[in-house]
Image 1 (cartoon, protein in one colour):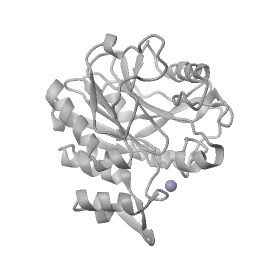
Image 2 (cartoon, helix red, strand yellow):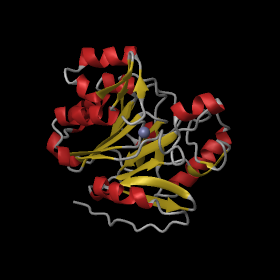
Image 3 (cartoon, protein in one colour):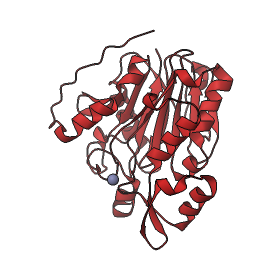
Length: 297
Ligand SMILES: [Zn+2]
């Protein structure tokens, strides 16, 4: 099995002292180059998977400034997004092909069979296929999902070297999209649950993410254990724990709990580090997108 040494990062910013112990305990560390910072899941990296959850730091987008907006072509200049992606990719060695989807809060899982399939169509900004999860076993392809509060989940199986990236907002989570991605890893690549590891990235967490009666009833209809995900806040409102919901689904799929790593960071609390749709959309009219990526060499 391939073993990648963990990189020690020197940073020119204030270290996030209060977070660092919790991050490390959860299996994550910061990587930073030229002001671009991302969160890496160390056990997933040791399993042979290049992976990262981006932050808003180190880019060129006016959101409000020096923001690393990695998608959302209707809300930012494409030149900014491409420059930000170029900077983001410098965090990784080697050349990578980024591939993603036009995300629609649906349940489709796209299979990327080759580098040719991963390459963007010439002249098309963004992604032209609709899906909310991707799976592949092609080296040098970075599967991507874009989020700003929704839950990004990166999954890797070190035996078949297949991997997945999942976008799980409340709709995707309520449709168990993470289980669908794992089923696809199993049917396409023969992955086995016991070999799979998953990293759940920064998202709007149970501390902040309040939903209304529509979301509450969907979860109560679909999950017998929904009550433990919900904390009532006021009439017909509750905060929902989508990190926990996705963890539960991974465990249902047979993934061992010690192979599930949850970044202990909330995008709404840490709006200094992450884009947050809830915090920024109303205030500024537009919001940048974080990108979560996974691939193998
Ligand atoms: Zn929070």
